[in-house]
Figure 1 (tube, protein in one colour):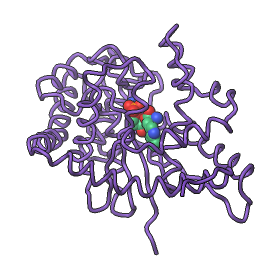
Figure 2 (cartoon, protein in one colour):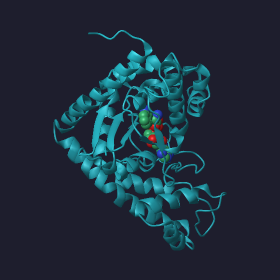
Figure 3 (cartoon, helix red, strand yellow):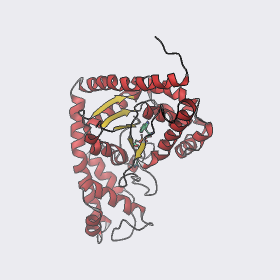
Figure 4 (cartoon, helix red, strand yellow):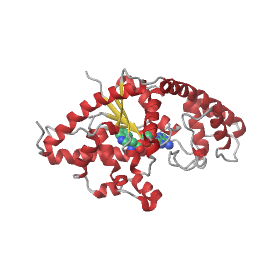
Length: 336
Ligand code: AMP
Ligand code: TRP
């Protein structure tokens, strides 16, 4: 039997942080040999907020290199860059014309980002989930591993599938295939180091709020030393009034590979002064191999470029076949 297919992507806005790693990429790595995987760097998404043209290309390569550094294995996975495959933008246009505007206005992430960007809301920000639907549906994946915050966008993708198939196909022979979101419980929502009720995010202006995968041990130590805690002695996962305790214990649990029970018992009588050095050491140990592998990938000239070229060729073949199917169903004349 053919393996099920997986597709996912991350935006090249700045560095990857622990939230991206634990919420998304680690799941990709863990499951990868069960699936046929496609992982893209979604650089078309990156310009929905003001971006820096001088760093867009290098940021894109950094993310691709981090995929490899985090353990994506080319035996099971294809890595590519979204903008290298024009079918993503083309399918977005076709989907735009069947997607009601109010579906997009209802997206939580749009509302949040629109508030943040104030006067600066462009059409791309509203349209972003349609581009994401195109990213996904071009590859006909069974599963889309993402963090909790992307769940609504996957639901929208499924709504677009239903609407498209309803308009342009028959129930017996659907053109598009609905994917399922793959969301892990632990790590699905890593919180900010400065506020345990807010998601750790690339767009938070404070560097102190997140740990980046390429932070030096020194930077990691400083951030954990200064991170927000509470005045209570004894640490627990389960007190809803202690979001920081839950977040930091969860990070420790995942990064150390211990179970919740083990961590609960180990930390039940600890104060923060004792816990913080433990979390620091564990985090540095967990991220060290990623930093090392990243350096190796970047140091070998031409290596990454070759991988991305092969990835583009393989991905384009799948994407173009789906695009052709979609255009045919919509009644377009196809070039001979
Ligand atoms: P983004 O940084 O928005 O491009 O997100 C890339 C991936 O990381 C998506 O699958 C997100 O759901 C996931 N992600 C981003 N921030 C977090 C977080 N704080 N906790 C868990 N997952 C996250
Ligand atoms: N919107 C996703 C995020 O911010 C990134 C993304 C774009 C994506 N296209 C995708 C994720 C396709 C999974 C599949 O995290």
